[in-house]
Image (spheres, one colour):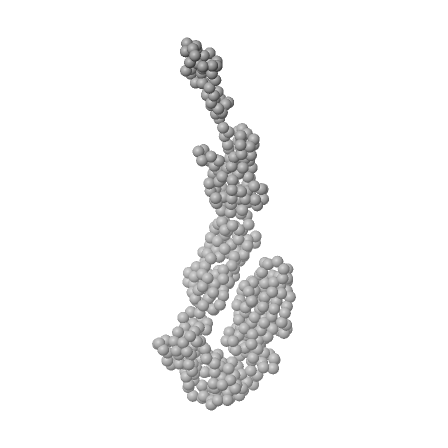
Amino acid sequence: MGKLKYLPAAFIIASVIAGCGDQNANQNQVGENNTPVVIAPAAGPTFQLTSPERILAGGCAKFKIVANQPVAQELLFAAEDLSIAMYRDSACRLAIGSVPMPSGSTSADFYVSTKRSGAFSLKLRWDVNKEPLNAAGTVLPSTSLKVNITGKSNAVAGECFPVVLRSLDIHDNVVVSNATFTLSNGFYKDSACANAQNVPLPFGNRATYGLYSKRNSAGVQTLQAQAPGVADGMLSTTIVAAPIKNVWTYFPRIALNACGAALVRVGDQFGNETNSPSDLQIQVSPVAGSRFFLTSDCSDTAKTAPFNVAIDQGRSRVLLYIKGTVAGALEIPARVVSASPSLTLSPHTGRFVVDVALLARTLAYSPADTTMTVRRAACTRLTVQLLDNVSLPTRTLANYAPMLSGSDDKARFFSNSSCTTAITRASMVSGTSSATFYYKDVSSAAGDHVSDVTVADPQNIYTAARIRITSQN
């Protein structure tokens, strides 16, 4: 047998033998060509994957596979890392699982999108027996930025807890920022919450900034951070009352010899009402010129000597009724005389004022509108009055702070006309009958936004004032 010969451009093995007939007929005959010819496979195409060194998070970047010669049949290039999405179109809307290179082609374009910033690596395989194609580079954060505030979703009144401001892009990638943020009330610089962060906060080329927060009044606290060109950050925390500590009394200003409601309640050290963990007996000590009753029309037997009222476990208040037989300011003490199980609460002395004014009954807006339309984000002035039982203004003889609230978290309240000093309560100074505050709608929704704004008595004795405000773009 002759020596094997390899021909580079063939794909089959053939044996070419000269002559014909039965070779055994004449064993002396030697064929002219009895040499096998092996035609070896040609070298297949080689591929190269080209890509940009940097792509933008959330963007759509073009990648390309290039062959050094046309492919003989369609090839499919599949990604090993499924966290990087591949697309057929330049808008990155038509997702694909593999990149096709049609028969006879020398290239295939496709597009890549990922929201995760940092280093990326893409490996494509078309043959399990071949080394994959590799592309590597960096995903840069998006240029659309936001600030995120993290902290506690629930806290106790007076608790100082840490909060962290993070500079992020819209895909939640951390981004170093030099923005200066305007902060709402409730931020503090120190872990004791003794020094308020009440001036603009420069981030100073950092990605996170640690602060603290505290609120003494129960309810929902909303922290907010704002900066030009950055989406606002917000954190809502539900503040619950601290452990029970005090007995509180609330005796309103009433007309001489009128029958008025008197409230005895228990709460924490900050004045937040809270349910008692035990049965309480509270002693109320009338003073000269005051009489207490158990019925709302003051028709039962008057109590003029110290007497006990009960607040059962799981309750926070008891309602009494009082008459003043002399004009003036009367100091009426109340204290816990027994508790089961044992519980020590601080006593309280309530101020009871009797004069010739009529009994205060209602909080009302002035003017007495029930609806209002304002411009979105405008700083709108509102006035609330304390009215008597014939709807005339009546003075308060002590500082009075009714609570402000909106029907959603887009309502903000401020003490000044530039809407920079946030508040949660209006301020009615002793001797006056009205309070002024400012309202701002911070909604970013398209179209009109409606909020019901309520001014309420902290003791739920006076009727609340409500107005529906429509904010228009």
